[in-house]
Image (cartoon, rainbow, N blue to C red; front, side, top):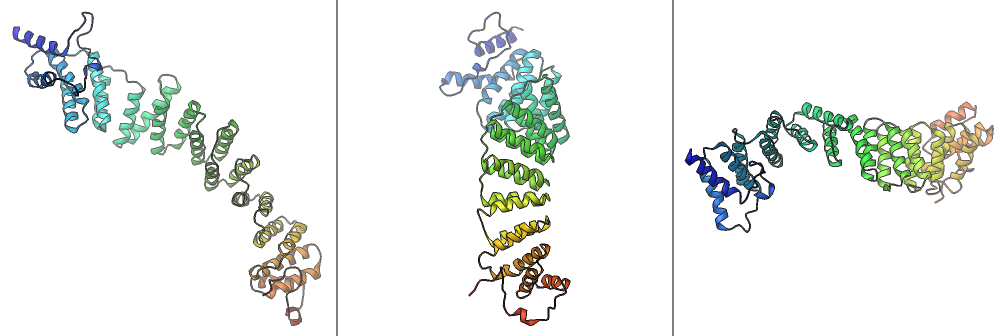
Length: 419
């Protein structure tokens, strides 16, 4: 007994320069772990001496306290050999009854932190279960690491279950989580393809950080992912109205995603609002977007308005003829007729002559100007493009298409360029 007592006293003297009488003997503070830089040879030697003498110690408390001290010492040196030693000493310090249950809880938390830092996720999960067995109360960050460890070892169901419990406890104010913690939960839900839960978590994140453009956009895109295009548009407009500066490229990307997700109507409506509020440029590209979305949504009147507005930026023959066809679909014969004639204000390229004359002929016919219609249809038969359609209309009008005198020259409003 005397020898055991002397060994224990020797170890404790080496570990402590002074311990107040009312302090708990097994409670080490982090400041015990001094970096080896600047240590005297005597101190460095004492670490080696402790290692040499450790396995000869008979007193459980002295042995496990010394092992924990050595574990903390080596944990500070980020080398493979030092980390391996640190883990060995941590496990040794926990393998016995020398430390109190509270000291073991603290020690195990340190080991769990080391496991996670070294990506030893399976060991972390095993250690976490041991921590619970020791009646340890895991805080939010430790539970987050457990969830991510499940994910990293491909236990997807366990990771998902952990994430769900974490969010439920957070919402019921049973657990304190910060912004970074919520982002880790979002990561887990998203990577496990639970996009509805991802959307829910993102709303919680946004409630903590509603001045972040990134968070508003992420929520909008998650709504799109879940097929909630209306909500995505509402979120984006709310961000704009709040004064959050969203870059034009991001706004347009979100609008494009809405269309790609199968909801061109909401995409068109949002883009229209953004253009009305001058949140995106009034240029040919955006008007073409707007036209396309309205057209895909089968909102022909809105599509024709967008196409008409685009003429300010590109008054090409093709664009005028496209607009005239939209008027045709709406049976707006006067607008159709005027638009074709505007397209033909200047001489028309050969590739558009047939189409222009066919559209002109249809509009003239609908306006009950039969002779002008016949002339336009004849013109359309004299150049490739819409010959069959033009002949069909002439036959419908009981016109003698064998009269070759009519095929001498294209005349009238829509004539080809000369030379």
